Image (cartoon, rainbow, N blue to C red; front, top):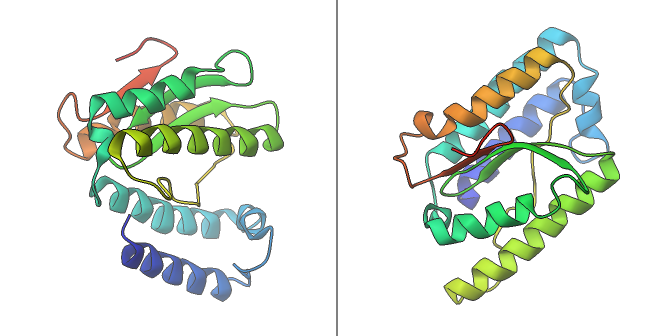
Length: 181
């Protein structure tokens, strides 16, 4: 996502958080969002999560993951320790970002594994492209799945994401533990 788009989104989000007595500069601010009354939490997610995904789906940037061989590097990495360190449930590799649904034994393992995926795939993709530096954005969105209906909604979101972004077959990679697509 372009820096100016990201900066505008963050500024708007931070203003909203401050207006709801949450300091976005403090560690643990995300947990405080989860403690908001249901209507305020829904407002936050409806506005900021939805906008975030709309911006991602606009396919800003070079969209190198549209190249199947680069998307496969990410796919292979995501599946490398499936069944060992984590259970991969589903993922979609979009031209400029990924969404995944994965089950970890704990938060520490989740953070460490996400950093490992980013480091490994960035190194490999940068080598192929002849570039260096940051490949992935530092921030990531993570959500705790609390019930079956939310799980089903997220599975559907991943499956429908390429269609919503108007991508053609071959411009994305969709995988599910129920069968690769």
